[in-house]
Length: 519
Image (cartoon, rainbow, N blue to C red):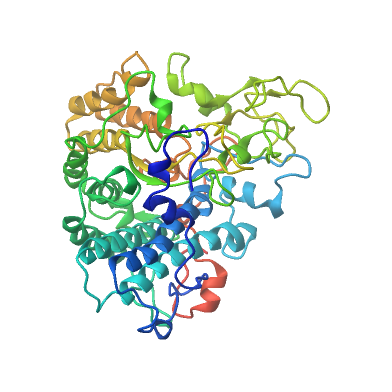
């Protein structure tokens, strides 16, 4: 299966095409207690006996990565000052869930709780369950590449647990295919489990892979997840109550030294000045020196990235987009004109994203995306700038674009090390690290002298560099901004909303689950 319009058939027709498109080895469905196909379904006739058969099982675990760019992504973006989804006439009300998310008024059984929050839990559970199935199936089988495949599966499973820890805190740490209900571990126990899985798996993984294996996990993926965990360790190992967050131990030195493993690697490089957008273009599987952990997408039915559909106006693309995701004036205005990253925004008079022709709104007026949204409960078709970070794939099939999505890029590792060094008291070194990224995108360097000024500079640079990449909620929590008012969220919200509630369907299914405080 290949992306049209580019000479990369060998890359796309290799293993990673299978990782996206091959049928699953078993019938997989969501399971609310983090289990999957029962062990009784694995027999001598259908389990994996060779490395090729085992890779057939790995397919299903990678396939679940695409779902991480849906519910998990939406929860981490629409709940912040980066993205808002206003109600536009009859569109995007969806029982109020999108404004519920942006305003932090969700509950376990609300519209959002029963849909996206529950979906995020289920999506991660499916990924975990699929990994458990394959690990169980190859447990008593021997083949030369088994250690690497086992490590690969454990890392993928750890990443799904990481996302659950981020959203919900502690979760059941299920590592078997036994059908049962399990109690929740604490958040600190979940953190420790993920850290152990990653560190134990790393030695069996390669530092890099050949082009036909691009997208499979490497030591760099492990290091990136760990660096992010250590950056957020005070939150991720802390305790959230109705009254607030009691932080866990800081891991700044670990964050810095782990980021260094990537910064000192020859396998990852910052894009040169003027080339930042190559990280997001349809051929970013080829032009990918910054990408550490990609999620693979194909311009093929059901396998493509649909971000264009989420944000574009109904008349800007074929098929008809959904005209939903917008940003706010304060976010748009944080980017100065000299910053090449500002080019991702659609604002002002608009054109068709494929042909470049001028387009009108549905009333026949010239389509104009405004800076601001007057009322998010009754917005017009053109209110709010849009973030087109992943541009249209000329070879798209319906809404399916072939741009790959990266959960981690090397630029973030510079900013992780900068933040860690600043918290360790090395503010001058932190500013140097920020500018190694910033001055490639914007010729005017960042200047900050005090530790707090450097914190503020890092917070802004993460907005500029990582906008719409699913990192903002975690950044806002870590830096103390998430609960504060921001555009279209006018009140300070309760501290327990640092975590989402355990969805009501999960508690109904598993009586051992205990709801998060405050819900």
